[in-house]
Image 1 (spheres, protein in one colour):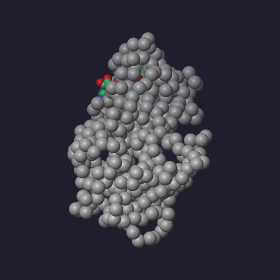
Image 2: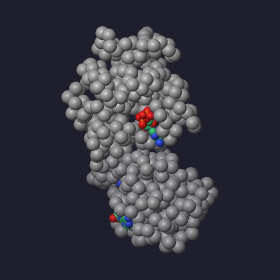
Image 3: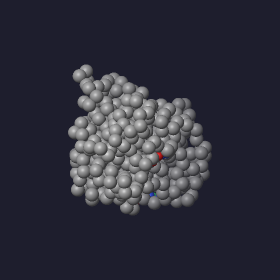
Image 4: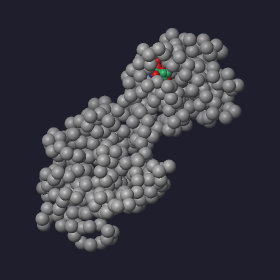
Length: 466
Ligand SMILES: NC(=O)C1=CN([C@@H]2O[C@H](COP(=O)(O)OP(=O)(O)OC[C@H]3O[C@@H](n4cnc5c(N)ncnc54)[C@H](O)[C@@H]3O)[C@@H](O)[C@H]2O)[C@@H](O)CC1
Ligand SMILES: Nc1ncnc2c1ncn2[C@@H]1O[C@H](COP(=O)(O)OP(=O)(O)O)[C@@H](O)[C@H]1O
Ligand SMILES: [K+]
């Protein structure tokens, strides 16, 4: 079992294609299913302690995996029962049921067991479960002390993370072969519990991954403040937002941070406050990342400032109000490095109503704007032009606090100013933001979050070295 960090994420079609390629290279559906069933059986054996197991099997290949997992558990000496609502349909699933060979209880009459393994439906589910099947599943999950989903909780849509009906909450989900978008996109992800990938030994390729831990190092011995990265932020009408983003940029490792448009000295004194009206601080070639948007406002003054930011040739992070004042076409025409950090409202203001999953929407948006798009929320999606995408999955729900987006903008800007691939910079910022929130636990405010970026950064550097 491997954790999700950095692992490949495949939609149902890509997973089927990987399976077909393995079959073309000499595998059979049966051998793949045997490997999956055995891996599930072994994982359940490790997770379940000495408790009795009930495996519920559906009519497709997910059900086939379940029959073989039950056979494996029996071979390992475990007490295991099987229940199903319908007979298996495909040849491989039929063979799997024959391999189990034991009793199969009618699902509606099955009594709960301490460990429930849901092998009803996986990536093939296209419509809600029948009402009686959904009710039986809910009853059996509620009656179990440990509920384990095979590949996916039955009732979620693999590609977009939607719930097709009522879906119970599981403690663990065993992803077969690769993670699927539903393991990381809400609302499905919250039903999965802990997700573990069971590798099936087939070749996988694709452009979407779970957010990897950042590879970060302490500044090299010959560093100076500008070599570590200079961030300039344009202050808006709501001064606090810029202050928070600036503080976050400092704590996330920028060597020099200036807040343009703030001139009254105040703490933190390490923050350089400069006028934005005299000379033009936006064309300073030392700026590694220029941030506009936090607390900007949407009036004529805001528009003027945005025009000046767009005219600079610096890497640009656009957040908050500024996302209401541009168009994707304008951004594309500007070119250069651009990172956009919209929440759902800002995303729709900039890109209009979108079809399909949050992942697909972010990828299309990145292409349209020629920018890295960090589509925020309880399941942040990061997409770059060209198709690469990262799914951040669940973060602390305490992040739903005013100003936490400003902190994220500052954290990403610090990594952007440090140089390298803008997708990696955005990913590192999102990772550090979530790690800072984890360290803080409950009830934190955005000011705390900005400060907690420093210990989160230190931990990321330690983990990179390890
Ligand atoms: N793709 C791969 O590489 C592998 C896939 N495996 C398993 O195969 C699964 C996918 O198998 P399938 O494509 O057979 O799909 P599922 O087993 O997810 O079930 C879909 C089947 O049920 C029917 N169905 C869909 N929704 C239904 C509903 N609401 N009520 C009644 N019937 C419904 C479909 O017509 C189809 O026959 C994966 O989740 C995984 O468990 C593994 O066996 C190993 C390898
Ligand atoms: N329920 C949640 N679970 C996890 N992260 C969340 C949740 N709600 C918000 N966030 C994160 O918190 C930040 C909020 O940003 P944003 O909406 O721009 O807030 P603000 O404008 O107040 O700064 C984003 O990084 C978002 O991904
Ligand atoms: K399942």
